[in-house]
Image (spheres, helix red, strand yellow):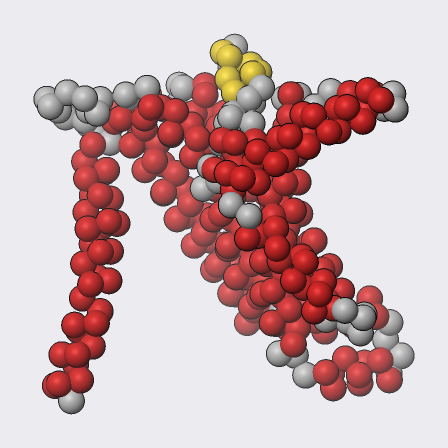
Length: 295
């Protein structure tokens, strides 16, 4: 027994060591630097308390980035889960070549966010605009990425296109775990397909919805790579009488702040992002778990 425990510790030790060195220690260093005036270059570091956090309340670009990140996250939660659920119903039906469709719907998830952003940027800025000019389609003549009121919706569309296939697999696994006899019995009783989905499938898939919403929420809040390559934060707009980047999500705002050698301020923003994501995630999981029990 002791020998097995020693072997287990030896196997786990490298992972624990890596986790402590890469996650735990940098996290506490980040908390420390968020209450200093560190600029990433100077060796002298001065303690400033909560000044960096207080300044964020009057920083238009941070407030705007936080608000559009929340809006972007809500869009993704709705779009991705609705599309994924519809796709899961399609690939678990008796449709021919459903396994081929499963693979096809999942493929976009395998494309990295950097490559994905450049591909869709070319589509929106070149292909669609050229088609709009060629066929005199007015709403296509201007790129959706160049308009402040459409760019976030466009980003949500691209993220849904990429992520829906992955979430679909979670729903597929949940649907396949539900006894088919329940759906057959409801069918015999005269329930329509829509009624069977709403009153049988959805309640019994509550656990899958908890997982899918959590994954969508956390991924959207931390979105960076696709934001960088698809829009680079543009176009420009105004907020609180100040110029801001219309599609600069919170992660990219933190990156740009750090790149300007305002490391302490960037770290304070990262702490706010961490706390907001932690609180929202805990609330979401707690609420969904209660619904699982009720159902």
